[in-house]
Length: 410
Image 1 (cartoon, rainbow, N blue to C red):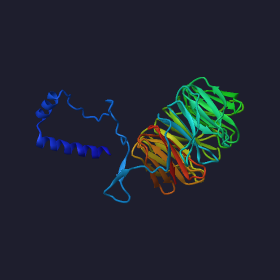
Image 2: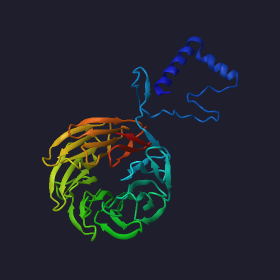
Image 3: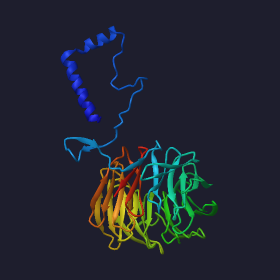
Image 4: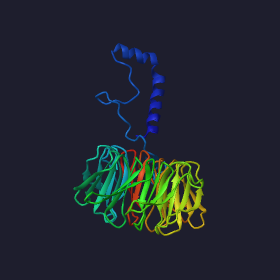
């Protein structure tokens, strides 16, 4: 029963009470019978207050009958084992039905998107799992936790291959695009790199003076790009750990507040950075030149992404908007809107379609050529914290503060 229906029934009960009984009569009867006045909340037989199972869910008119309200849930499947906020989700690069998720229950899971079946529980962390990722071939899945540890498992059997420990709380992980090498960014300002599945330490990258908020290998695998709360962006040589390019707030054309996000284009020539100052910068990775200042947001940029097939990039902000930029002309192409802060944007591989998720509990599909919203998926009760898309673009998976993972079909 919806909250609006409950309010309606409660109002009806109040009318009946006013018409047939006075309030003092009710209290006198309760006292005479040795009973306490009843509480407003519903209680079970054990005196426990029962939660409304529909609390947080959106309602909408039924597609079959506009006079009938239905639960707004477009998911075709779900996974509900976490029971705590789910911070990260990833789809197997070759098997779109295999999904990894990690959350506030200190666990990761491998599960099936088509059935919702739990395949393996991946335990070991002693604090929240904040990032999960499959290796490029899908043979391994890694998880990083706030406990400072990284675990790697075989994705086919759930067998743990190794665990490695960094210096501090991990923030993100990224696999090399051509091999089983894992990179991690930490809250102490360092990056660590290991060979997997052996767990052999390869390099440490020191140069940031604050948490490394985001980073990745370039698509060609020849460089690493990282950004930090210290307002720096560094381009590294993975083999030598030498900083080849370094941009800082000392350059007044760069960011003046902590940098939250970074992405690299398919050709590995350009990076886009997003900052709490609400501004984005387009950077040439080979020489460190600031190619363009992209400014259209009124609040912090939380997420950035490049399109694979078009010369376009997207920035998502706490102001509830997504800006679509022409990378060549540096002009704003479209402004897309959610009803609340944007959490993540990601492009469907080799397509003009963009997926976005938001504090408004929704996942949206956009055509960046026209700026048109093609689909809106509902079903979560709270903020959608992460979203991922299968390599063929047919399956969308989402992770939420409500403790659920949902599956949507395009």
